[in-house]
Length: 182
Image (cartoon, rainbow, N blue to C red; front, side):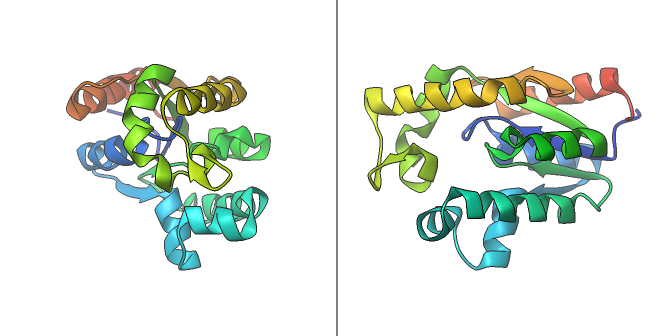
């Protein structure tokens, strides 16, 4: 099977990039990099703290720097942050470097998945507090509407819902086989 040497996973927070990514990498015999965890290790701080102390723009600059650094590696699956490809320069870079897979989920499923984890997601806060219920669903829908046009430019769009992760890994493998090397 011929697959790209770099596979990037994009999608809204909670879509499963950090869960599916290591399993896909393992199946391919590739390394796995979670871009947000990579940034946290280098900064010695969480994404949430970087957002709170330095702002989103500072985080996005760090994200772009780390994206370029980790993209020098081959035979790698890279889980991007949910907003990484909403910067046009990142989207172009990723598509030039490898295969971009969008893990697509409905806003309802995303809200179900993120309800318990909103506290650690700075984009799901308002006035320093995590959103919940209808407010959370509304924020997810608004952010998804802003990002969807970027996500949809992926080489592969994979519908993932609440099913077993292994099913989604198998679907990704089949899609990569069809895509071939890039």
